[in-house]
Image (cartoon, rainbow, N blue to C red; front, side):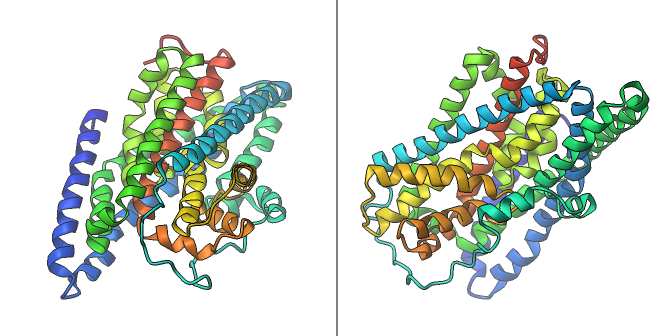
Length: 412
């Protein structure tokens, strides 16, 4: 199936999902059919995401080890790593700052008139694993097999870096082994192409089940908040592309066009992880060398979540506005620093953005239960966050490749 055909199928599946979900919600809610429909149709999405997760651990490990082993000495790895993290930190600051700016300009929480939950209300979010000490412990795997079994991307990346550096130190003696790992990565990408044929069914199920459960009315209730956030996300897209174009010139816009399929997949499934294999494939077609792309992209999935960064600052101030709590500029700037630190420790945490928001609210005397205000539409917001994360990581990979002289000027 060609890229254009798959994109059209996914778009068609989204529209069909909205229509079918709406009909089920309207005509099936009273009889209980809607609840059963949501329970069973969502199995298709679960299967697709499990198939994707099946691919990710061996793909990340094999591509990262091959990339590092072929990169050369440790100084080259350190140089690429410093450039990568400098870009990630810079874009995180831009995303959070833009979120704060837009939420203060648009005031989406003013006049919302939603019922305010009790301060003691349970958010249902697990924050037990959220602290700096546990995060640094969590980075290093106690077992690579356990890390792969749980798809702990950050732990796999750490082990792969050690493994790749060690393998590279053997020179020609390890070349055959590296070639075999390279073949493993190509095999996993071949499996990815087969799994992607199931994507339209998963997209239909994901969209249909959400609409069937909540109805379209929820979009109207939270209309101002959602419209403000989506408008802000579009501005963030423009900012990311323009900053990237300083390095990539006009090719930045061409890469955005090439990334449309993984972006659409991430948007429709609300999972940037689902788009990882396809994103890797597209940036390599664009001209990024495998050794750079396989190093930058996996790390980006833990440290370069531009959409999630904007959402954290946007949603936190939105909740303060709903409660009519004024936050001074100094408090908001302090919140920016807190989000910069805490957001780097949530890789692999379920509903990560909400966990960060809940943890941040309590530090600024805002009711943590305010998270309940946005839970109802979080899936729709997560769609935009996930798509933005894919865009940001794809462009970051190309930028680092260009800086390292590893970008083919004649790529697709």
